[in-house]
Length: 429
Image 1 (cartoon, rainbow, N blue to C red):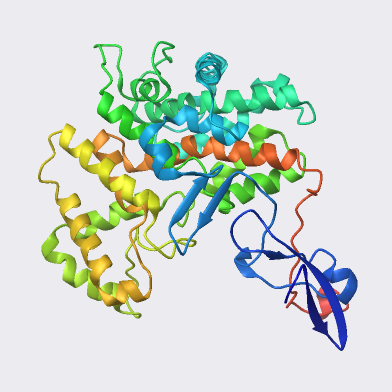
Image 2 (cartoon, rainbow, N blue to C red):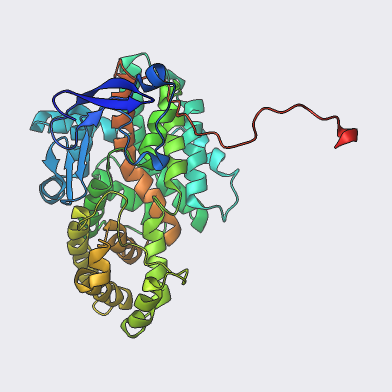
């Protein structure tokens, strides 16, 4: 393999395939004409060696532990910016000027209310419904309330739909939370910033005044930044696949939300917290480490390792610091879950078993503890993930729609079922 093309030998026939190189990261072999030239497909379960698209939004180097949004390191964005600035960056490709930031914040803030009829829509769910079930349904239902922003061929309607989803997702998430705990919905307040407004909608009650804790608001805002996008993960790929059919943007985001609900994806932080609760105390750690190393034991350490990162997840470093800030602010000095988490982290970074297998702590390891300390039940963790990831989904969907080379997604298969056979009448079976 050299130059700008590669050659493949198939049944004595030589096939030339172009090599495409990105700005950074691995090059790719263009196999788009492979079937036409050879009559064969490639086989890649999970698409781990397949680039499904060309994108300028997010870059991950799993070996080095690097995450870039539009070229900017995640550490810098989380430390110096806010979530809406990150939203602007992901959507527009550049950091906003002061005037652009003010205008963007204003437009998002003025879209935070949802149609009043949606409050009655929520009443159709059982009171004990999982917030993610409510989110999937209510996001999909938005296309029934906002007909004026479902024409994907109209750039203005695409922009309006994008703004609406970024603005209304916190409102829907807060409504899902309030509904499941039996409290009245709290309307958004335009005088508050994006994350403070969300905290107020979740935790304020009509009976008393609610003051947003700025430390908690900043911590949650940072969590949103860390979760805003993550390249072509399962839910983002779902959004792109749904969007490739021409589905309206609300339906695409609902599809991404449903995919995110899976415990191997967005539900991982909830699973990590449940694992820490199961371990219980530092004294029990050796027993569980032994269970994790035992191939015959079904127990698995949640919050360690990553499908892409084979180094320390850069988001985990930021999340660890944020966790300590929140616990200190709330006066939580001796949290047994945090004690277990810190000891597990120490072991994972020093034990040869974890080092060889590259099972480093990931962001889910710390985010569950932080969200729990803020007062969110574990059932809300994935809903918060969906709230943050919405902007990434929208940016990826928008890029896909505007890419002239994109076609409807249609993966192929290696068929291993029965060969052609004749129908047998039921009396002769």
